[in-house]
Image 1 (cartoon, rainbow, N blue to C red):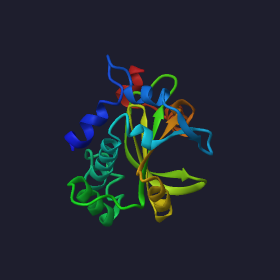
Image 2: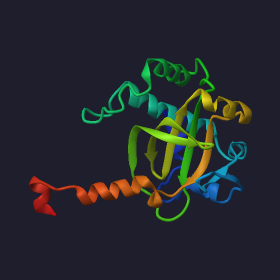
Image 3: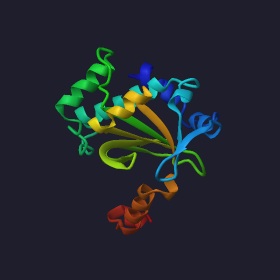
Image 4: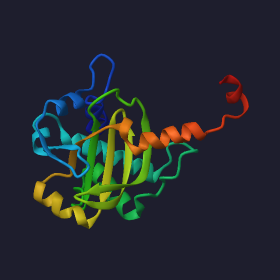
Length: 200
């Protein structure tokens, strides 16, 4: 898992002393089109000439699989079993190199391209994703300025087949996102108790 996914992916993410390589690549790359939400999307074929896009797929699949088959710790288990037995096995065989991913699986890596980089990680969770105007149930996690979103749906099989890719790239502005607004609301509504209330 480390050699095929984590190490090459971490080399593209923010690190003190080397900046944010993936952000720099997208900032200097020609964008492919603008999505319905106005975000720039990027040509995966062009990205594949600049870095190993397969490593990001492997990394994302490994995170979703691990989150579904085990809990990250005893307090975080809401995602446990989210993939279901069928796709837990599909992902396991992919990670072992025994079978390719089925064509009804696609990942979108949305990268923070402007402003301060959100320096945090979020565990895998169920989510929804809009693809070509259609809202699909999906899965997501965030790591250091990249929001990985995954869809499993027969409706995206034509897109995967026509492009030949199972990962796509677009821009993301966390600070203007609903995720940030929800965090701010939660923070404002939270009531500190015990020692935390005395320390604030």
